Image 1 (spheres, rainbow, N blue to C red):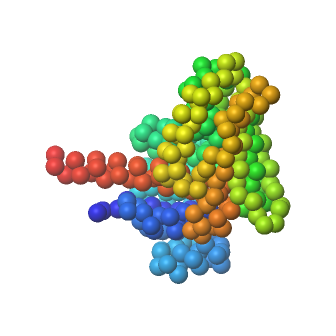
Image 2 (tube, helix red, strand yellow):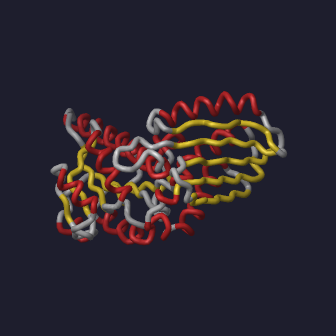
Image 3 (cartoon, rainbow, N blue to C red):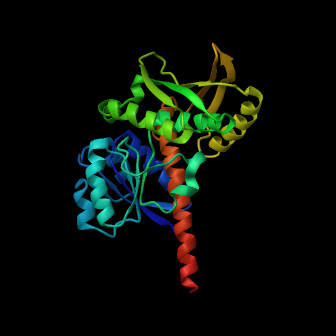
Amino acid sequence: MNKVRAAVIGTGNIGTDLLIKIMRSKVLECSVFIGRNPDSAGIHKARSLGVPTSTESINYFSKHPNCCDIVFDATSAHMHKEHAKVFAQLNLMAIDLTPAKVGKMSVFSVNAKDCLEQNNLNMVTCGGQASIPIAHTISQVHSEIDYLEVISSISSNSAGPATRLNLDEYIYATEQGLQEFSKAKRTKAILNLNPAKPCIDMQTTIFAKVSHPQIDLLSVKLNAMIKSIQQYVPGYELILGPILENGRIVVMVKVRGLGDYLPKYAGNLDIINCSAIAMAELWAQHKLDQDQLLSYV
């Protein structure tokens, strides 16, 4: 089978984990792994795997405009806003793993098919990927959500420099994503960095205030959603709920990573990477199918 060429820009933990996942894909292949620091652990890992690398950062794309069909941006929100201009000029499909909010927000289990014709997709945040499917399901059962609050707790060891740099953008992007996919009147997102040893798995709790809670119907819908998410994030697990507590619906999920490059407790990073890969593979298959149809015209 032909594969779609994918580039990764950003050679930190997220970018390197993406590289491992791309190499396992049946429809994607990594054509180049791009960063700035020639001594980064990610660059050394890519070279050890025989993957072409560059330390020219965004300038590489201008010099090699045909290097890929799709690019994963695992840098920072500030940098992606500049990178997106280059990707658009080169007509490259971009999947943004930063909270830059340049492109259409993508949550695979909720709106994957609506994203196939876009040229820039934003993966919201790790907390968004964990909570938005739950919030969306709550909104399908209840016509109106008065208030939605999401609290994510992650190991401080899994929060790298880019995550810490983008904390304000994280909060805003998560709240905006929750509002868009649930239509809640008010939303709030909180991120806790837990320094506990041994490191904790990612846990996300969703609180929803609605007028007439329908717990039994919601439970059925949530179980179906959980199974859908587990198809691309195997470590996603419902650990509490839905229950009613102090007049609020409460749901809690846990995410344990695959352990490809990142430790398994870093489910917060794994969920956004798994979601990005699932979206890229669907887009790649869509592109391959279209190319095959064109060959018969």
